[in-house]
Image (cartoon, rainbow, N blue to C red; front, top):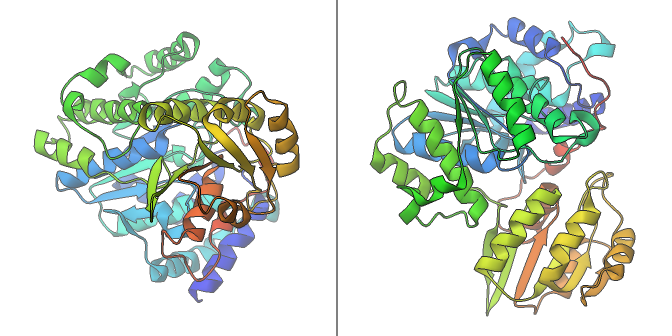
Length: 431
């Protein structure tokens, strides 16, 4: 099997959609020798900020001298971004080997219950981290928590960043319903850390924690004014990132008895953290600035707007591409006041919202911005070639495409961004 063959095989799994439930993952784990039982995890769920919080935790523990596995999704450009050790992407050779090793196990499943892309990749990650003898795995959920494939692990700590509206079709239409799904990662007597502030959502998290005899630590905005955050200038801009950092610090403190981390490692880790596509600032000569941010729901858009208004006040050009199943109307209302021009482009996905439909909506807003529907992101970028300040946002998929088009990353020979696509949640497995 070649790397191209392995990627094509992973592409083929997308057609099984995303089936929420743990039955397949437990069966795969048994066939693989239960690699998760030999690893230590910090399990991170939540609506927004999961990836950034994971990146901060990974950076701090790596600065403390640990060998740290990092499992996140989606990837921006290369599939290997999902599975990293000390921020080195899994090699193509290891991807091929792990895919090959899984073939006989996958044949034991009925066609109607075939493991999905995410279930297979979750098991690949567990096997890889166990083989590589990592000291700790920073382990991000895919969708939800309770029935997410990542939820077979028993972590050292469970982290819930926040509860916002996203994926309502599958996770629930109220914040308490969504909170119940996210709180499904809480395990008996395992400490829980959250930055959630909504009383109704927080009540659900508190009740689940209490039922599991799990200590609960709530991080608040008051923690941003305490050492060491009070004097640190984080590489990831925005008040929301400072809250993510406070969440990471609270997690490290609660685990200090099991994994000691010195103050120097904390500072070094936070000051060196990198997480592309999250208010990433790109400078282009002579005086052009491009901002890339993967905000993909109204709460993310609101955090992005607050950060930009503080960091870069003034009007800019907005390039916006978003998935049809998101509340893009609310996102347009939030972001339009930032823009003197709005260029709407399709995401490279069958799920993309229509630029024409978005144009009609934005033109009806009282934003006084010029609104243009573009056939592609490349066209939108060409139209803004002389604009001094450009914001590209609406979807991590869209930002990943921008990173490729702007040559900010070594693009793989194969198109691996498409692996982020799936046909939708086909069923719920409740076991």
